[in-house]
Image (cartoon, rainbow, N blue to C red; front, top):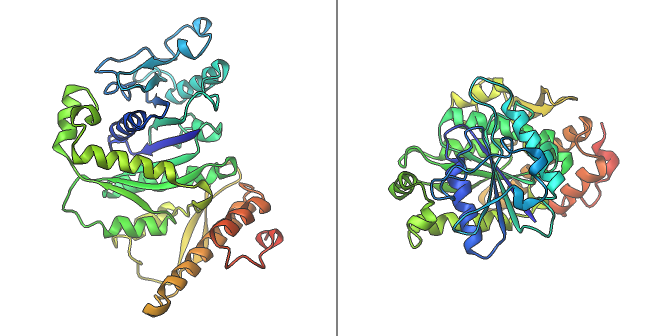
Length: 358
C-alpha cells in the first residue's frame, strides 16, 4: 500500500493537487483513500461534488464500528475522510488529527489489503506534533512537499524536511518537492538550488492553469472538469511518478538552519559570501533543531568527469547526513548503512556500520 503525505505552506495548493491525484489514481484502477487533515475540512470537497462530508471528530465514536462508518464514496471512486477539528480559536487542531488516526486504527481502516494508495493532505506547520502524526505514527511513508518558487513557501519546505529527518527512523522519506508556481515566468534556478541544498529533487513543476480555477469554482476536480486536458495528463503522470519512487532511493534530507536559510535566500540560494562552510540543521534528541558545521562540496570537475564527481558529492552529503542521523538516534547504524549501500554501491564496498558511529 502506497502512503503519500502532502505537506506545504497554507494556501499553496496541497488540497487541489492531492485531491486531483487521488482522482487520477482511482481512474487508473487503484483503490484509493483520501484523508483531509485540515480543521477547515475542505480537502475532499472537489471529490465529493461540493459536499462537505461529516468529519471523524464530529461523529459519535460509539457509532464507529468499521471502515464503512468513516468513509464517504466519491463519484470518481475515491474513498474520502475528513479529520476535522475545533472551531477557529477553540481547542487544538493537531489533536483532531491524532484522534482521527486512533479511530482509523480501531476501525482497521488502513489494513494493507484494503487500499492500494492512501493520500494524506496536511497543513505545513509540522511544528505542531498533531500535524506530524501521520509521520510519527508511521501512517505515512513518502512525503511530497508542495511549494511555490516564493521564499516563504521554501522556508516551510525546509521545516517539513526537518520533520522528515526527525521521523526517518520510522521509514519516512522525502519523495521530493512539487513546485506549484505563482508566476509562470519566474526563474526556477533558485528553487532548484534550494532543492540541491536540501538533498532532494524537484519532482515536477505545475504552472498556473485557468482550468484548475474553473474546476475550483465548480467544486469538482480538474480531472473531471477537463479529463482530456494537458493539465489532467500532467497531474496523472506526476502521480504515477511519485508512486514509482522507491523509498530506498530517497536520500535523507539535509535541511538548513534558520540562520543559513535566510543567508542563502538573500543570494537566491547561491553560495553566500564569507566562507566555504555553513550550518546544517540536524534533529536534536527530542526533535529540536541544532546546527552543525558541514564543509561545502568542491568546485565542479571537468566535463568528462562531472557525472562521477556529482555522485561523489551526493554520497558525501548522504554520508554526513547518515552519521548525523545515527548520532541523534534517528536510525541505527545498520539502517543508515543499508540506505547508503542501496544508493551508492560503488562507494560503500568497504564501509561498515561502525564507521557511521562517531
